[in-house]
Length: 256
Picture 1 (cartoon, rainbow, N blue to C red):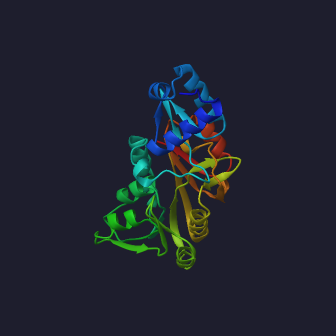
Picture 2: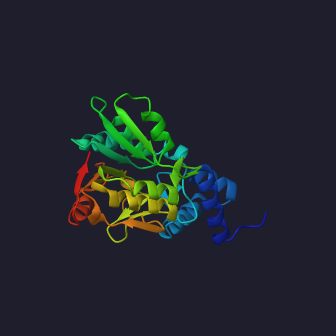
Picture 3: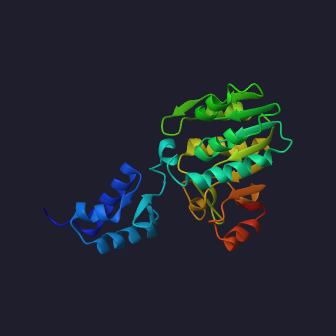
């Protein structure tokens, strides 16, 4: 077998990471026929290019304009952290009567943690969230119509945004693929970005809830500035100094 160039190796590593959801240094070294240190060097280069995030012993792919992880994959990553964030975010409902819940796994967990002891109207673009809440007698669920994205089971396109534009909402729980002080809240898909942008416009209060790995990441489509947020809910894995930098832009930052 002819030895691959560094560029060919790195292309193969990205393909493997996107196919499997993550890669390990040891198995990559065996598959590519190179030393582990060579793989680590490749992973460092790929991380510098924003294509992967390194972990202890491997890496996972970073979402981009051309690649987005599925909802099924997201249910396997940082799950205890996401559950803690979701519980804290759901407590911010307070006296809100109408709530938007975004597509994605963390918003789905927020929906499951919403108070069930009083009437609440939930507007969502997520089939999964709508299904989870629809049988609760205290919940009125409005599912936004549109084209269903197979990877996330969220609805998009003009049907979705037109319906959403007719609402005035007390609170919106917004997710994002990345949040950074320079580029704001971003997502890989322009159609998804439009739905999120309309939800931000429609809501009186806006809460972003996301794990530490979202911070500092930037996707293809910006849909809101950090200053548009009222509250950011994340975990203590995000350093306090970094949380303070986001708070200086306007939102309250809760680390749970």
